[in-house]
Length: 399
Image (tube, rainbow, N blue to C red; front, side, top):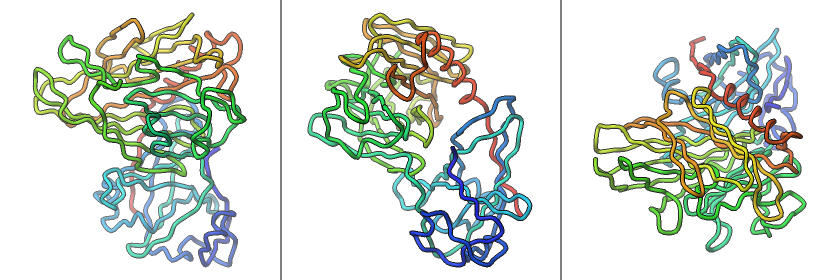
């Protein structure tokens, strides 16, 4: 469920980290201004679809706030609240710095959005000073935990991913919780938390990137492939975020650079991958994720609904797993198969951000689709694509 704390009509008059973590102790007051906030504005989040978007990741652009309603907005001293009948519910959020310049670029939160609805949140802030909330951690990211192994990992409480020379692999979890802090560990054998359920081999695994130079396929994974510079941008607690930067990729049309933001959100089993293209040429740049071909697999592709789903045998001793890629149909530019993986081509351009999602399922874990697994997995991926592709709108209004 989304992380919220109901404090009713009474809000704390002082902030103590332990009290915040425990749930905001009550004190005599009427509005969040008792916490020292001096200003406020409204954030409206609109779900235009007839679907309930459960635990939906909402990304708020800080520059948009400053340009429209609050030029002096301070990301180091703010809080979001939902107000109903004089009661205030704290909505836990996280501010992230995407370029490590110590200025936050985005605020993220996880929220269930009812069908055809507009959710109004009040943002209280002060232009100066700072404080930090300490919510329950449900996302985590870290850099390499052993020489020659994964270069980075990111996870939610439901699923975990790792980046290995450009390949992406998936951990199955037996119960909800964070596991990457426990590594190094024997990942390929069943542990109390689960195990590594995907062995990518020579394939892209679960979403490793490919660049196409005309008709030539240029994999961005494997020891001999162009290597990415990796940075852990955020270790949670709501979004775990890792950045991979590829520079100087040579094509017939000129050099291409790719910056990939790989993230996992609390209460979600998918990895959201945002790719920003930097190209000297003005023409299209074709990139996209590869999905490993599984032994004995059943797979389906629906380019109009924006998903590829596969179910088959996973890593040794893991049993069966499901792999999926979700993409915007308007970005679809074709497919490309090899002996070990099938890839989705997406059309990009200089300065444009492409977004795709990857998801994994394990027959023995908390993400199991149940029996019959292959049919249920394809159906679940289709439903997941429907929800992820809803054009949720975020607007800011003065108050």
